[in-house]
Image (cartoon, rainbow, N blue to C red; front, side, top):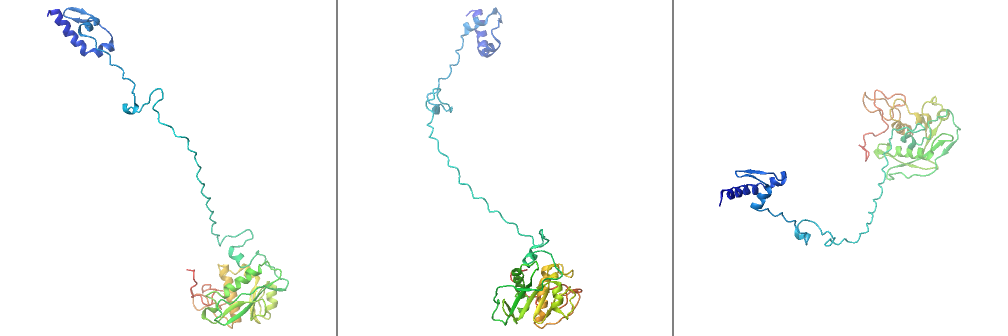
Length: 305
């Protein structure tokens, strides 16, 4: 081997290792101990590497593992026929929940729910009515016929802004309450529109004064006289400042006047802070006692706390 040949081979080996550099920067003349040699001469001496052949198209994309399909579209999976989508059955609309009525809310007529249930149609109070009494029709059996039964007829003065049926129902609810006069087993009340042992009348202030004479009611109070509990319509509507709760006052008013018909007289407040006895004149003054509408207030009522 001549010195020139050895130099060429040595340079060719170096060029083979740096072929990538040759492709990036382009052919450049190379210097050697024998002089300048061109890149073409060097490649001819050491051999030119063959370019990497491009991969043949995959015959089966699955086998090739590339997730590709042939260009001509063959080998694609079969597409199923479109499925007719059935819309889901709509859920029924939720039933709206009615809010609980506020018992203290006042309506456009200035009345609460309790006022309506007591028969009031407005807050109008005539000083004097027609004087004609209308019997509330209908009958109601005594809730406990094993006790002595006493009959009650309910009457309303014509012209008062009152629902007679609701007023009558309120009277009987109060009289037959577990805390009422029948709590000791002495009585149970039945309502009738015929002859009765007791009459409960709702009348105007002027008619109260006429009916209760010689008692001095002065258009302000109610009374019990000659088998009649005469309820002042003004008190049924407005109650009294001695009671904060008009419903409690109405309970007191019915029980107190019917208590007179049963033979009970007035009593005084026993001590400061105690419940007023039912037969205390609470319309006039409750203090130093606490208002009370029942003859037997200590009796527990089912469903109440």
